[in-house]
Length: 353
Image (cartoon, rainbow, N blue to C red; front, top):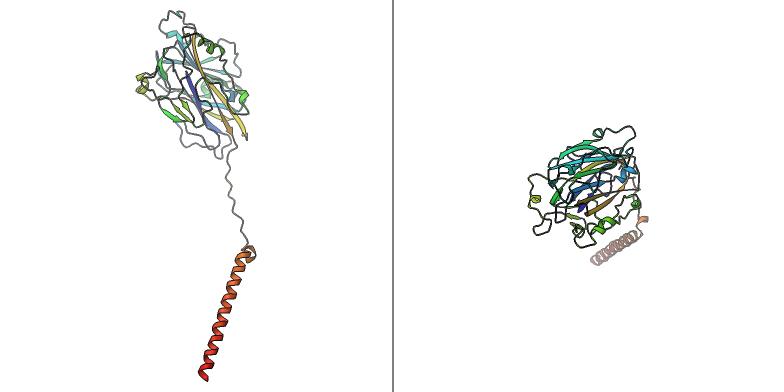
């Protein structure tokens, strides 16, 4: 399993326009707006019963940003081509059961999980949309969540049922705008930020335990498409999770994209955010990945028409060496003129003798 979260290093004047928008920038605006992109893929060599992508929105929980709009991902490799979108808010009961819907309901029969029991249940989450098509991008605004006054988003989940080998939201190479802090997928997060303690980290123990005995786990932890600032998820023939359909699915793959705005202008503040992706098969074979990013928020730039101060004219006192050279040159010219005058007088006297 591999997941990647990308954003900008700094907020002001660095916003990249999203679909349906053009030319937006932060210069002179009262708030800071920017975007997050989330990509994910199945790098195991087998199909899985379920796949969930969770964004705990730490930046919103700590009231540094507000999620304003969401563009859903476009993926390849889902079994039935349908998925569900879930969310939580600051007023959601984390132990509440708000819906019995499950993306696994339409999975084919699996004798190792005949009752289609989810390892990652949707407890504490509300269902925003059911049966969304995986080959279509949807756009949601805050109005679609029907939030009460004082309520804001604190969690987003993309829930898929069975996914095939090669399942992915991205099939190309790109440069990360934020920069990556890890070298392999599944590595422990070591985000260099003074706000790193705000991250919601997954407990790696159940996943590592599932890999401890032979092939009991889905061993994809050593697969990585991340190298420095490059995120290369181009499908490569011969790899264990290669699928020809992911190369050219007949439509363009897209990440999940959020438009967020800062709650206020905050100079020199770190905004951290993570995302996790998890898969399971037969209720025992587990794999996961988690990524995190940090954005430095700075105040909006202000343009001030400041004219340069007029400078007093320079004098020789400002350039003592130049003044000395010019004085020496003037003296030399004077001596030369006097010499020529004296010579002229001598020649005139000789002619008169």
